[in-house]
Length: 124
Image 1 (cartoon, rainbow, N blue to C red):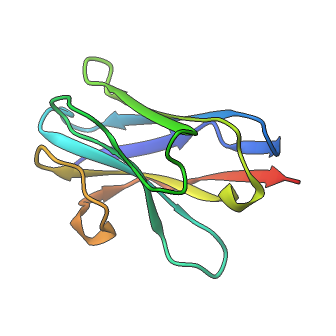
Image 2 (cartoon, rainbow, N blue to C red):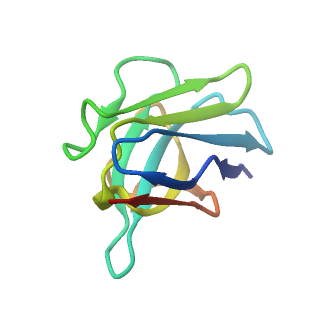
């Protein structure tokens, strides 16, 4: 089993920044790719960003490209999502997810483990 705990959410004005963290525990993070997803009220959960476990280029949704940056530290079992130039439409609950295998995926069904989520609210 893998447990994921997100932190770092909050309220920020448009144009501001937040940094989300995801702490991974339970077993080695090695061999697991991770993803960041978000879900706004009344909407489906959507892909935000993903990391391969062994390195390589992360993937991003078009809506956050050039504003968000994801990284992971396998030695510390942590994953981060730096969010800059936040917009009101970024308001959502943000989730960290993990899947066994080397590559990240845009599809929620491909992930085996999920965190409880952290709220991000961007005011205009």
